Length: 360
Length: 263
Image 1: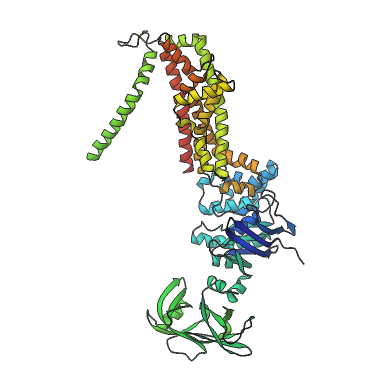
Image 2: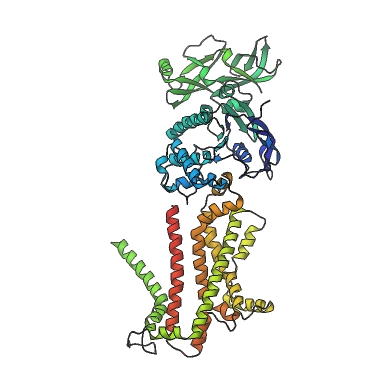
């Protein structure tokens, strides 16, 4: 069995009565780009701080390459952190900031300067070496923070919402740069963000947290297509959740009766009996639309109550007979073809195979 | 038009108030250069004779030296204590912290007449009454709150994450203080040293109670006044005023410039 880069075994962190992290166990392998995502207060930043040694776990063990590091002080672990607000030292210049880690290690001057120059070039800000921090833009500060963390050549890098303070288009740019950098360096990235699309764009392993617990771990595709519980289904992507009672069970599918219709879904991993409450998860992007009533196995009929425009995709909000909202994501041109307006009656239908069942 | 008149009146008022406050001092400075023994007009002639009289009197020079030694010592010790207290406040939370800080900043709020008497009584019991060391200790007590306040204000401007960033990059706690806290707080430390020295330099009441044969300059000035009223006092007063003023002015400039840079 391989040893993970970072392993958490039943790690918990309590602040007085408040449980920030409630006994989580997971492994990040060498070379992973692991992203912790979840709503504010879910414990993802606390988990990162526990790994960095800035917080001491209330219980549980943190291992780095198989060695327990609970008692290692933050300055003894080589786990540099890239901070959201950069945490650059205002009284030092750019190169003095970047060389800090090397200076703490006692590396002598000429070697330090060479490393600093190398990394500044690598992140594309070689010309800013002697500038003071106050003169830099957000994006430049971000790169200094990155160079400062990488200069000690760590094999694991921690990042706490590093792109949070950047404006939207710069964020997208930095996302692809970070991903390329991680692949190029071959090191492990442990990344915390509340932005789901950011995590999905960069990570190969996504860890979803809520209330201090891990809800699901998997690749972005797995988590997107097969959410394991209600929270993940609602948090990730744009999913519609239709709950009802099991009315029929067959060898390969199940029929659920809900207040807005009966739906057929493939049997998942969970066993269910007649009368059980189950939820069908229908992703907004697998739904077809028609202004006529289709005789499809799975369909809902609703009236358009709103729309959200995100570039070429539009999310339509349909109000169903029971008052709930059903979301459909379509390309711009598909919607215009329908010639639908606010209040129009539409039929949304989908294939059973593209849906997923969750136990309630 | 209305607004300009209002501004003029406001400025004029402030100038009048300041003028009223500084008039005695300005008179003092002016007459220190007057050849006449008595501070009255008409002006008898410009002279530096009183200044030379000051520098020729060994008792005055002794008092001046005492004041400088005490001042320098107070500056160093108070700044150190103020800084460590400010850092503790910045870094840690402990039970009764607010109460503790309230007590620490109490001394300058107590009328010095009462404080001076109390300090004399207490210091006498431990053998420091009527001594320069007693004055030094007393001044540290009243000056440390200034250093604490100035340093605390500066540290409050610091991002807490900076210290953690230093630890994360390999600096131990002590190294973190050396590499991050001290450089950041440096302007406040300098300002604290200047202000505490100025406060100690000027301080009369407690020094009068607590000092013995080795007097500080403010105490010596009172004795001179009680003895013979000589224009030497004008000269001494001018020198003392200029020193205190310079110390505080530099401290203010340092604080002002630092705020400018942070913004």
